[in-house]
Length: 184
Length: 108
Image (cartoon, rainbow over all chains, first blue to last red; front, top):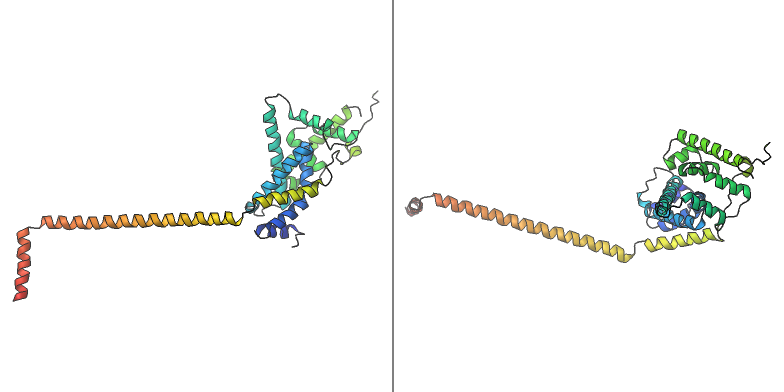
């Protein structure tokens, strides 16, 4: 079957007979976008892999409940975002006993993690992003790296366009300040 | 005077300093297919749910039947009690007279 458009893909996902095939197409179409969306927040490849698999399994199990009120990509991004934030919250809860900060762990991943291999400027930008609060980090990543429209971000994050614009503006200011303050 | 070289967001660009293992995305798609295949309902599962439904239906039918029988029994008991009550209120002599009169009328 041809699943070149979201409508065709949705039709395939709704029919129990074609669902597995359509879902395989969905995974191949969206896996990279979702992976990078999660990876930018978690930095570690292994953590991203776990969260991405959870995201896709949640999508598979929730297919019958998806009525097509939002775009397929919006729905998938929303699941991925929730799974990522839940993962970070669980990590934070777990770290309460060890008094270790999640952001410190992320910095550690950035310094010595596997599959991290950028130049010094790119690493500095990542360190700057880590100084932002979690939600602002999400907004900055979605706008700066993915260039998502504010309206699409609104549908995914449930935050108004005005608030998103303000959040992104403040994030850019903070990052620029960080970049200026540290010697390159 | 500040001699630190300045770097801006524009200079850095949007490239990420991350990579993924070789063939990661091909492998992931295959793994997801296997994982979802394991979750698909098998014929045994479907039969199981049909059996549950059939058992539930039989149970409801049985309970309904039982309730109906009890209701019927209760109704006939009530009727019987009512007849007994009526008979207890009637004078036996008058009843014999009534039947006797009825008999003599038919004989004539």
